[in-house]
Amino acid sequence: MKASRLAATGALAASAVVVLSAPAFAHVSVQPEGTAAKGGYAVVDFKVPNERDDASTTKLEVTFPTDHPLASAMPEPMDGWNIKVTKSKLAKPIEVHGKKISEAVSKITWTADGKGVEPGYFEKFPVSVGALPEDADELTFKALQTYSDNEVVRWIEVQKDGAEEPENPAPVLTLSAASEDGHAHGSTAEDASDKSKTAENTAADTSATPGSSDTTARVLAVVGIVVGALGVAYGVLAGRRRSDA
Image 1 (cartoon, one colour):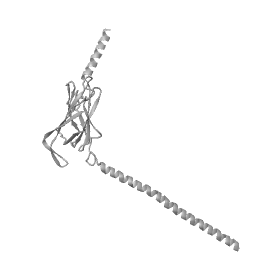
Image 2 (cartoon, one colour):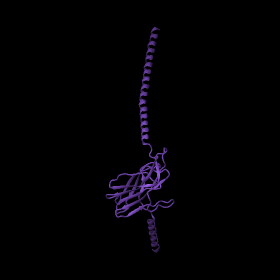
Image 3 (cartoon, helix red, strand yellow):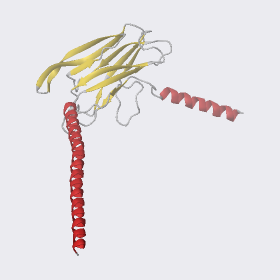
Image 4 (tube, one colour):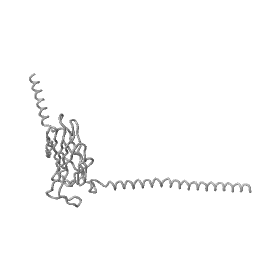
């Protein structure tokens, strides 16, 4: 009995250690809608889950990276939320498409004017960003999540190489390789034009095929008529020769 009780106590203690040491299951994260390629533009979603049973998320503050500042960051309007974009002067201006930029977005704040993100739900906060850096593989955004009971969860811990995920990790956006032409957003208009031309060429080829078939049929018909006429003439001549004989 004592041994079994000791074993049960040890198991409970071990499970408690696992629970206490495990990182949060759901946290504020960031993902692109499609791809976020180096040197291009992308729409990214900050996903905010509500981890509380008795409080709503009423505020989200996202701090943008200063080591790789983004010249453009435009949030999408959202019903039920007031949005504030904060810009700051850059210590060193950056050049985007041949134009020098001396300030960039440093923080975006969403404040609920209604219920916010209620328990059991999550919400996405979209932002169009760019141009994404060409000399980085990822961007780290630190976020503060405020609940209706005034609790603030700080998602600001940076993941270290080889270490376990921290308890409150900062959202990290992974960047993909730039496209072959150097433009991550591609050339949609050109692609559409090429597709249109291909369709036109295909249609032209298709319309030409019946015409070619008609021409061939007509030639064969004429040849058939000629051959038939020659056959008739031959028969007539043969009949006359027999009569004369």
